[in-house]
Length: 259
Image 1 (cartoon, rainbow, N blue to C red):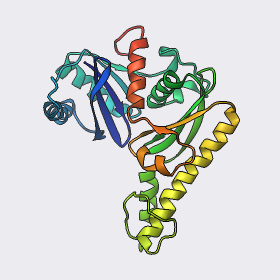
Image 2: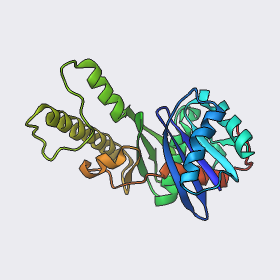
Image 3: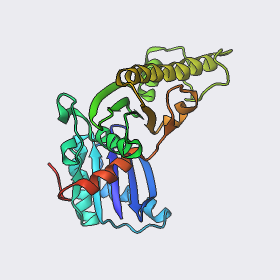
Image 4: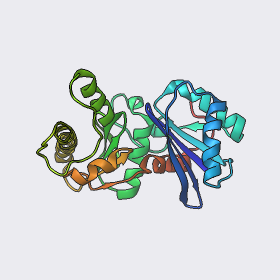
């Protein structure tokens, strides 16, 4: 069983792949101080609930949190008897990157690009909803050319709550109408429709620059919330980053630690 792990600033996704399918995947809170033993204590019960053996034939990781990487390495060595393989750069897996500098592109964004190109074989915009919402742009030749970054929904919501003492907190839900007749409804309308409009505006401008046939898709934990109210998003792919890590694993020349 191959483990694919996407370590983000806020959440970590662990996926288990075997026999051409994802047997399970879990979304966990990222704790940058979690030790290798605590990682095992958190994951083992999830495997038990899914009736999966706590074993691995390999581990591939995309991490945007360098301080956590050593603990993941220790976990893999101690509990799985496997080295942790980290996706670092596009050239490791045959992905051309023209972003300046290329090494500034996060491993999760590289994985998204790999999976999107494999899925469509044409230009694509991947909107990844996370701590930051990122737009990953792959051109018609399959080159990662850049993108855009904006505050993620939760970050934007926390900023609003922190700066407005009298406004109530509210759930990230789409209201039935744009005209809010009470404060919570008005907040939900402004936030949800406003955020979706921002996504559409950025995606529309990128698509115009690329020209031709361009797919616009989403991934990340909150993507399903905005898909129904977005004019640009075509579909949501919850395992896109994991799919990209799976492709990366197959393309790595040496399946060991990549520094």
